[in-house]
Image (cartoon, rainbow over all chains, first blue to last red; front, side, top):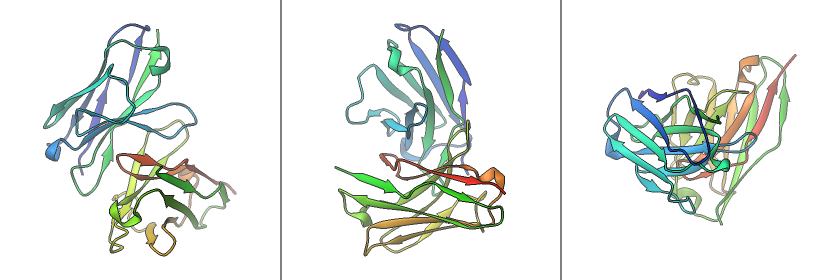
Length: 108
Length: 113
């Protein structure tokens, strides 16, 4: 089973700043089958990025994903008030999928 | 429009079994695996397993192996997740999802004596 480790656990930033979230895999993620989700309280997760770097439908271009192998990054170029939430990475390149433990992005 | 609509909240006693349904519409049910994800209160997302609706084959996370059964009924385009031997730690919201894209609204299962 591939273990995903996200860092930092909590990120405190102000609107307008740039956010960089990391996701590291215990082994290489096949074909960059890595997704990023945003989750707000009381809601189901929302897909942001799939295939490590492709934005899902309707996702603003301030969200971008990069990386390959075992190291992946989600970048939010300029934070909007609605971006403060919990973010999860997830790999779907092996038969048993797995999620990272999440990064909470909070307002500073 | 793709929709995954889950059954309602459940309250169960320790040791009982719960079965949650997930009815899909807006796409061909057999085209995508159906996954189930657990989220305990204040905790992260945990992948439980999947079913291939085409042939019923399943893969389960090691943590839930032996206690979870995921099935798919192609006659009604509905997937099911059954979790047995419930304990208080199973209190959580359970989601069905065609990872990575579409998610159900979640079903709260409360395990309490």
